[in-house]
Length: 298
Image 1 (tube, rainbow, N blue to C red):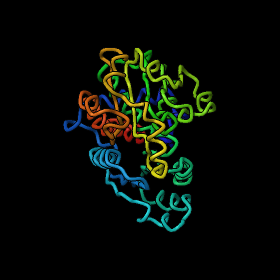
Image 2: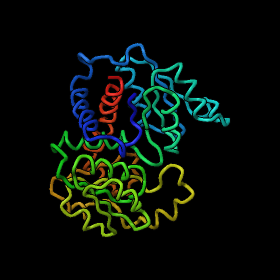
Image 3: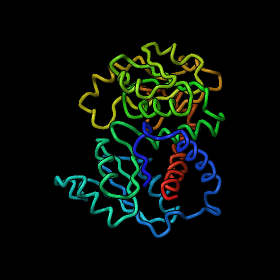
Image 4: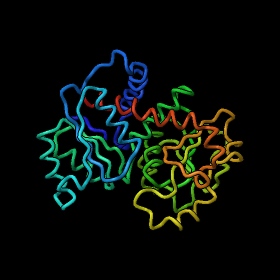
């Protein structure tokens, strides 16, 4: 039984297979696509709000021939305290796969263990694997193989997006730099476990110099709203803007997994200058997740 729970435990071969498939899926959309989910029903269980993840998975499941039901915590007995393993054992007898977006990584892993059906992590506090596979696909679509390239992440370097980037960099052999205040850098344990060419610094200019891609995300993630004022103050010097991008390679890409707060993690001018890349990145969630779904069904 295959799952996509985290990039930390995913092999290079599996990542490369999905990335290659995403290219073919995108090219074939609307013409001659196979339907590997024909006759299947998938459950989407979301306790965190979503735009791109929800829409891309719902459309993707349908385009691959499946039916989909969207469930939030209040639709299930989970909202009244039923253990995740009991919900998993019920749904595993009724549906063919699950896409879960929630807070605790342990909940997704427990669901996969007890349900007996393919399970996808559509975001937890620990990792965001579907997003990073999409980002790598988008980079390679525009700049060729990512191996040996330099990707710099600016901002909160300890949240789920950069942590997934850390594991992808180790598996796919590219350099990954994080520019963040010390308290917003991944733990030494995470870095040691991943291996690879990964570095953390508080020097944003040094981290961006010569980069092939510069990436950022919101400074206040879901569930951290109470810390918003403090986080905004501490991260104020870690904005992507025109002056910073002058240090990267002339053709460097800028990516943002959205939603974007202009004037905070990125200025409006830089966002709009790279909007085509950023919204192609958003569109590619659909194609990459269809490749993931097909990989799980294979």
